[in-house]
Amino acid sequence: MQLRGAGLRVGIVTARFNAPICEKLLSGAKKALAEMGVDPSDIAEVTVPGALEIALALQAFGTTEQFDALIALGCVVKGDTYHFEIVCNESAAAITRVGLDLDVAIGNGVLTTYTDEQAISRAEQKGYEAAQAAVEMALLQEWTHSNFSED
Image 1 (cartoon, one colour):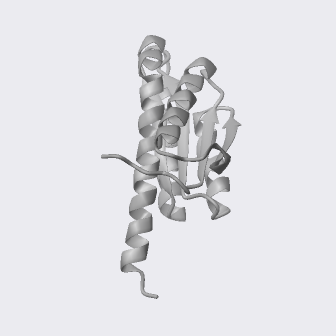
Image 2 (cartoon, one colour; image 1 turned 45 degrees about the vertical axis):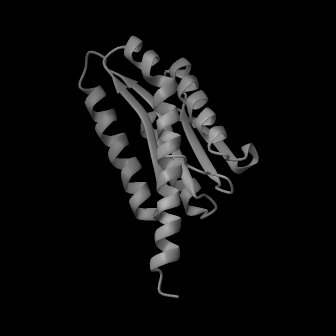
Image 3 (tube, helix red, strand yellow; image 1 turned 60 degrees about the vertical axis):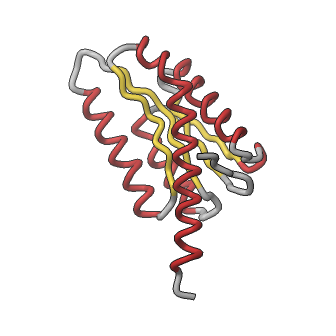
């Protein structure tokens, strides 16, 4: 399926923790957006400290009602403590909640891996797929609103 993102306004939130991996996620997302025809001037980017802070930035973008789609990018690599599970579960739940509460399409590109090697090998593709998901869901929302709204 060829997705067309021309005219869509997209917000990207990228965590700085595990920065080299997150930079690859961002590179993949930008590549996908370019291929789908999203104009670079229609993309707004911010960074946050880590995965747990992504949802608040998404919410800040979403409450402006200026974005058709949002993309969450981050990386959580398993360490020796339970903290990994908390960060993975809570960040995913918060990202989902923002999308549902604000009725905005979000592509979740937060990697959760056991090793740095896994993260590095998956990062660019995961960013690419998160951008595709965000655009696809934004287009679905646009279609649904235009075909089923009671105006």
